[in-house]
Image (tube, rainbow, N blue to C red; front, side, top):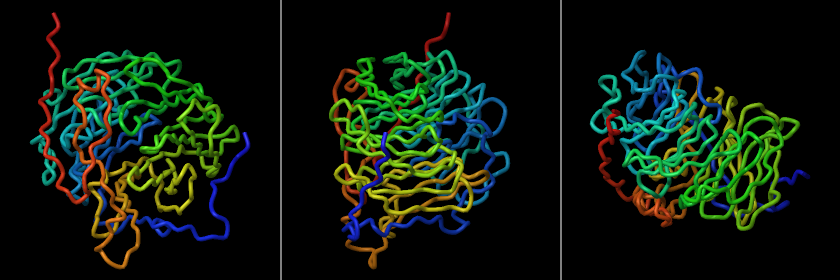
Length: 420
């Protein structure tokens, strides 16, 4: 395939409010220090998860402990903090519920999935007082080998998917602790992503294919050849558009960005771009409110960002950090500083600390910047698990970014029936 550069208007300054966006991490007192993260984790995991109130990372130690910490409490953490401990092998991935701030899902090498309700155990102002065990979990059992990735559905309450080394993709109803659907994949899944309304899933697999499917039918809609390199690929739907971005490597081990138009079964990408020749994978994140695509290099300090407009990807700039990043998590838009004209915030995980990474549009005044903040995801579910599992679709519920976050009560963990 011929490499197509990202198209920009030659010799013309493109009119865009995001031309001067810049990234910065701020002062050290805003960092979270003294982390002791687990040395091994799934290579396809971002290693850190967050919502507007908490972040979570897998911790070093026996079994599979992980830490949940309030974002308000910055500075140096305890050397041996209280942890969440119910897995018997290392945690591979973590994901917070998009609707319930005190619910997080974990997957592990022990072939289990656990959904944790930590309400009243950790609050936005207080850290965990003592270790939390099995009593706070809803176990989801079905995988037969190591589970590698977990992702919550973006519109349906209590619905999540997991992938594992048993070459299956499973969809669960966490409210009933039951498996809803199971798809046998043709090879190991390297990465997955829900689309904007949670009706479809894209996945990259070890056989260098990109697959699109509706998990409720347990059939693959179509398959295309992805990146030709031997290393793993990642997938990211670009908001409400019909575009899918994938990151991976060429045969020459250059890092590559591909864009696919999903309105028809694509046989080739609409855009190909060689990013650089670094060795770590590119972690993609997309802000559907303002159509900004962020590519963070795993193992280096760079975060490149682009504006996507009418199927064209325009390079904006890049942030270059001093320390290499092990992982990155994007804070929901409700957590940005509107007064400071911040349009995106990430948590950047290095070897021993996490630092907030802020992207700001320079403006002279803190007022009159509503053009930067269209209605955003409200944190409220559009559908119940029953409605979604029954075939109903709905777009995410949007609200003004200044609106108070929803106060939703998470259900108590469901316990499986006793074995006889």
